[in-house]
Amino acid sequence: MEFTVIDYSIFALLLVLSSAIGLFYALSGDRQRTVQEFLLANRNMGFLPVALSLLATFQSAVAILGVPAEIYRFGTEYWFLGCSYFLGLLIPAHVFIPVFYRLRITSTYEYLELRFNKTVRVFGTITFIFQMVIYMGVVLYAPALALNAVTGFDLWSAVLTMGLVCTLYTTLGGLKAVIWTDVFQTLVMFAGQLAVILVGAQRVGGMARVWHLAEQEGKISGIDLDPDPFKRHTFWTLAVGGVFMMLSLYGVNQAQVQRYLSARSEREAKLSCYAVFPCQQIVLCLSCLTGLVMFVYDREHPLAPTQRPGSSDQLVLYFVMDVLQDLPGLPGLFVACLFSGCLSTISSAFNSLATVTMEDLVRPHCPGLSESRATLLSKLLAFGYGLLCLGMAYVSSMLGPVLQAAISIFGMVGGPLLGLFCLGMFFPCANPVGAVVGLLAGLAMAFWVGIGSLLHSMRGAPPPNSTVLPTMGNLTTILATTLLAPTPAPQSPTGLQKFYSLSYMWYSAHNSTTVILVGLLVSLLTGPTPAAAVDPRTIYPVLPRLLCCLPQKYRQRLCCGVDFSAQDADHADATVKSNRVPNGLAPPGPSWQEEEGQGYIRAAGAPAYALQETSF
Image 1 (tube, one colour):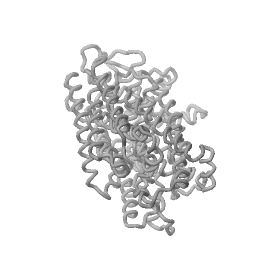
Image 2 (tube, rainbow, N blue to C red; image 1 turned 120 degrees about the horizontal axis):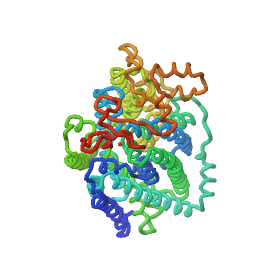
Image 3 (cartoon, rainbow, N blue to C red; image 1 turned 60 degrees about the horizontal axis):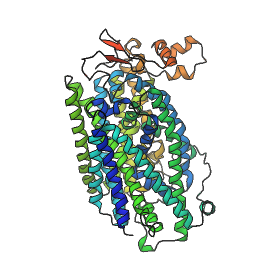
């Protein structure tokens, strides 16, 4: 199972082309001389590259290894997660994108200051930075570790090469380079997975035979309508719980929202959300088919006991190296596919971390920062986070069993952040105190359930549905399946053990609901936000619009006293006048001029920090 020169050449070609894209955008156009170009690609991206970039960020290397392993071990029930993609993308397209895009913000956490205050914004920003810093090192190290165990591919050569190349093109080319390298890497991922499926299926007699044998072995799952939330995978767990997981990623995650904001118009941003839906279904199908082909191939061409993988995250790599070993170049193509997922994910992390640090922590304290200095600082932040990623990869290598907990932390934070944004956007009565207390309560609940489940599994008596990866997009789909050994059917848990056995797919819904309930309770106890103090442009009137058939006076009561008449008019013609000020959305003053479709922008000569220059 050794790589050939052709395999290494294909792998090197991926790195060279990715770097070339970064250099091209560093030397073309405005050469990344403004903050808006570096962090938001000048807000002129089309919907298709944005959609493929959204997909690439979601499809990490961990997912490429993990979903087929899930299908191999447990059957196709996981495929029903695709049912959650519909609402998981429709809601962001019609709820979150209009609010964020019309406010002309750069960081999603700017919204929290506009809706609540600066304290809530800082809490949200720090939570996100903590989440992503831990995540990016793990997502770089874990696939390299699995690759090294199976192929002998040098571990630290892979880690350092990936980290430095990604840092290079992210720092030089900005968001535009990140998006276009994502497009290229998405095509590589499709090619790698298709090659494995086609060759593997041909080796066992075709796809029809794969399906037939998998059905005979009970790997083709039916619809399980059991509503029990403690059952690991059911239709409701995947189709409904998965919606909250998708919302935490595609609705409020800075990496994804930043891509929406880079679109040339709100319509293009929505179209990117629509376009990613069929792409996600294709990716899920490819991963599931890989798992089925892998299962049938293993039955007909079993590995010797000494060659069996030590953990489930190595299953795919052992299969790929076995089935493609006599086809020079194809193992290299799959490794390129694997590390394309890695590059696309960590480049998004670098860019989004640079954005929130610049917009939420630096600029509010340095309002007089010139455009050139702000751009240079943004590039230095991206470079610094790239080096930090390499450091976190080294830390990950020393964690041992704690590595599972480190990966878990990423998923634990997604649900509470979703709850915080929903609290502000859907409940006008929520106040800043309720938002902060609700976020802390949600994080406490997330860590309690997640760490409790993990500790039980480490003691050798795991709850039947435990996972080391709570909810959040690209890692969640895996952690429940790839880093834990298969668990035997345990006795029915009771007490806290029952609580810890909550299906990981419900974690995001559970934690976000905790934030909303606690936040509303504290807001009511400390005095709800007066209707006159709430700017309607920061609120989405979900109940009045869902119950649009009610008489006007009842719909007005559902608005909690907030006047949405102007917003409704703007909603009809897709034109919203918005501005950005440090402590809320004040009405535009005489120094503001309107530009159709672009909100309010300051007159010439005003600082670039005004609403016009704003950026996952």
